[in-house]
Image (tube, rainbow, N blue to C red):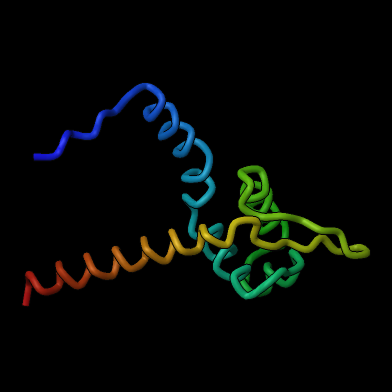
Length: 113
């Protein structure tokens, strides 16, 4: 028989910090779409706005949240600010969540067929 996992104060603090930072950053469909688009490489904010069919000011606000939480980097190229993924591994986590969601949707659909 295995030993139960212990939830200590350090782990509680770590989870609270995770929710307050990274989970908050990806808790918006537009921010998830921005990360998805950046999967293909660095982009200027104008390109990202066109890709998402959203106002540039709104996209900039979402990028600021992602930058604040360390998920994207910026680089100035002339008059443009170029955004790129700082931690591409976060896309693996997002892909896994999408797969779980699809599996669960299929399971639920099977229950009613």
